[in-house]
Image 1 (tube, helix red, strand yellow):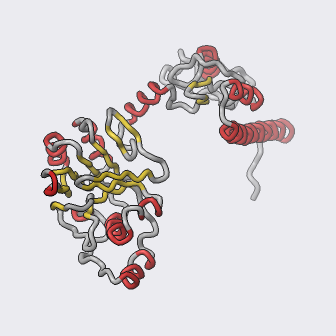
Image 2 (cartoon, one colour):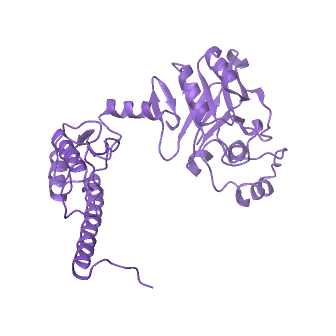
Image 3 (cartoon, helix red, strand yellow):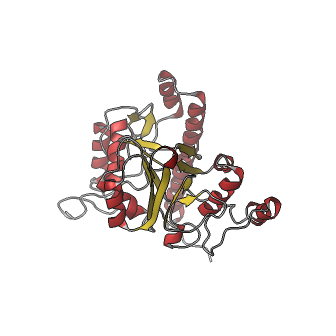
Length: 337
């Protein structure tokens, strides 16, 4: 997925630029304002590689918009990098100036190939389809915005930015924007895994599948709702219990269990623990959620999820009990022909 960065008060760091280009390496583009008064214009350049975009971000005066593309339609070509001028001819020039607006887009508009959004529009409005064989959903949206106005972006529910000499409009799409160090990003998929985990820890969230309640994590252990958990998502007691279960020495009755004794096989120090149900009972969670004044909709959604998980766990236990009974009464279970 592409990413857009809106730099009004601060510029992205060189590390941010490297991360965004690494995740979206099909070309970058940038637009800024030049001139004064009636001569004020938007200047853009696109189709840039990593070294070029790093230099432009470092030298371009604020405010500016920068975009990193990963091709979802139209193929990989510098001509389809962003931005596109919102004009009737919506050209494919790699650099230029305009007194109008330019469009940056993040996402994939799946309906851009339908005739009612291209050929039919040209026939009904009399506006010629722009020249050039290279087309993408963003270029078509820029052309449609020149006909119907930039509000077209809100109508189709897409995320983007219309940037002009005295104009800036942000379209939030379906999942909004994220602000990091006074810079607005259309998404944070470019960030390294370590950086995302650090941010979640700062917010009180976590990478594990623990329960998040108003930015508070609850232990993943069965029937445990303690809050003092570590990076594994478990409290100290549950973690110790899992460790002991993982390294237990099986007896003669456990003929089908692999021995994980540390002295005999030191390579298996991190043997997987016995499967546990990673959620407390529904009634316990419901009481905890009510105590923290969670919304009714959030409570309903969480209750439904855990009931489903509890049913899966009960079904699995029943299957294991059935197989154990069959082995005990009839010997090994053989596949049917």
